[in-house]
Length: 449
Ligand code: S3P
Image (cartoon, rainbow, N blue to C red; front, side, top):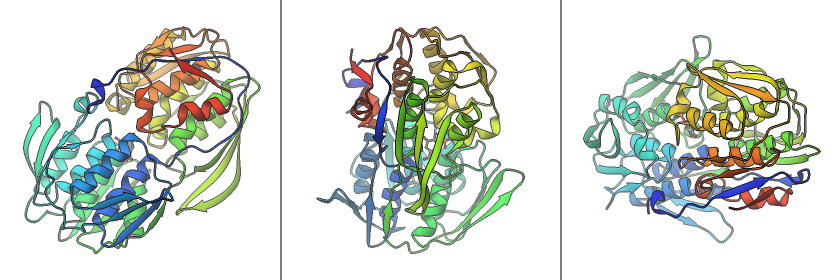
């Protein structure tokens, strides 16, 4: 059912006591999508521990089934995928409905679009607005036919893959792990070497998983901050075990909540510390946040750490555009931290925020304004006037089917004088279904409104 048909579920948050305790954020969304997709492309069984059971990922699981994999959740909560293998996908009987999930839809376009089958992709009102041309362009070069599409290269759209996919060298036009991954995944079903060049390194979960499942992949530095990634096509991928570490993009919400709510001390357990995902932590440390990385260890091929966070006096900073890829999903909640900081924060180079689950630049600016926080969009920059802990709040935020806008402004309400209200919290289930109960366990006042 498209999410837009669902009743909205407004929520409100209010300042109460300090936040105290420990929590574990759910499994990483990026890795969860990829674990299922690699399971589909592998032969034999893939066992996934800690899969994020959010709506976005469940859509990908359903798509994997429709393309020929067996996907089950066992009694211990592990997910088991019996793959169809590269070249072995079947034509799905119906439309692949990805709901709100841009990552699932885009990565799967690379997978299905490189097979000689006809596949139709669709999603909710948010996904239907998001640009897919960035995926279709390289796929067309690889031989995929776009049989039909909504205006401007959007879903619903239908792909038919070629008999033989053409390996290409492709430089991504935006710093986007989704574009990179779609091309590399398509390259898996081509008879040669597919190369992706990115000017700025983005999250590398696809590259890591290619290796884990047995593909030949090389990664070299490119220019000052980029990478050149090449994969040899038509390998036999073998099903394997995947442990999904905890999602730093979800941990970001309790983390900022603890920083801005006076007297708080919270430990967030097992957070993935992949350096291509930790831009928010780097920025918050520059702002003066007390965040300790405890007990660093390896989990599922990634470094994870427990983060001890204490309420802190934050100072405004300038965030360089070069940091955007490593904290792309964290700007809404960084803007909340910036509102409570002393002095202005300027976040540079945010153009990609305009094409997320909502136009996040506009949605954040409007939410801050509703809370009485002066801010300005200047070109691709967002400037937030920090009010030194004295945020009025009290407004209602339009969430535009965007889970991260919803969670960011609920966090703001925990420390803003008059609290905050959001028009709809339903989409939180796409990435962090346990957000409200876990926050309540820490002492947060969040209720239906
Ligand atoms: C993701 C990449 C990012 C990010 C998204 C997840 C991924 O998108 O915003 O939430 O898993 O590859 P872009 O590649 O569009 O920047």
